[in-house]
Each structure stands twice: as structure tokens, then as C-alpha cells.
Image 1 (cartoon, rainbow, N blue to C red):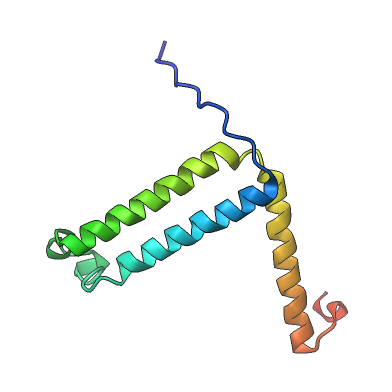
Image 2 (tube, rainbow, N blue to C red):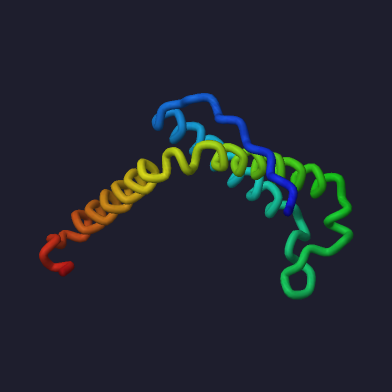
Length: 117
């Protein structure tokens, strides 16, 4: 018998609107931290696109990596707590956004929906 995994306490109740706003905020923090990390000179400049050790050991890189890992960790913890609870609503919202973008694209091209099928 293996050791039992500690049960995560139930997160504080929030509405789907609050979930979506916090998710967007955390997602933008991860993207921003990743962009900062990628903008450091020398990142990905080594053989096969790897980052050289001289860059990895620089204080600038280490601070940017720490910010990225903190943002990513916060995003993963948030999604672990609330992602399953709002999975259906999230899928429906993303689907509606995609359909809206597709409709706008069709309208801007001057094509009707009948021409796509």
C-alpha cells in the first residue's frame, strides 16, 4: 500500500466571472514573465537553440526565471483548485469566442456563412 496523497482543502467559493477574470490575470502574468525571460540577450543562442550556461548563471536570467516560475506556479495552483469546477463553462466561453471570431472574419471578407459549407 502506498502513501495516501493529502487531500487539497476546498478553495474559497467564487463565481465563474471571478474565476474567468483571475484566470486571465494569471495567464497574462505567465505570458509577460515568459516574454521577459525570452527577451534576455543570449537566451536560445547556443547549439540547437539551448541557452548557454553563461547566460543561465547571470543574475538577470535567474531573476526572470524566478518570476516566471512563480507566475506559472500560481497559475497551476489556481487551475488545480478551480479548473475542474468551471470546466464546462470555460469550454462554452472559449467556443463562443471562437465562433464570434470566425463570424467576424467571414463578415470582414464579405462572405456569407452558406459559402463556407
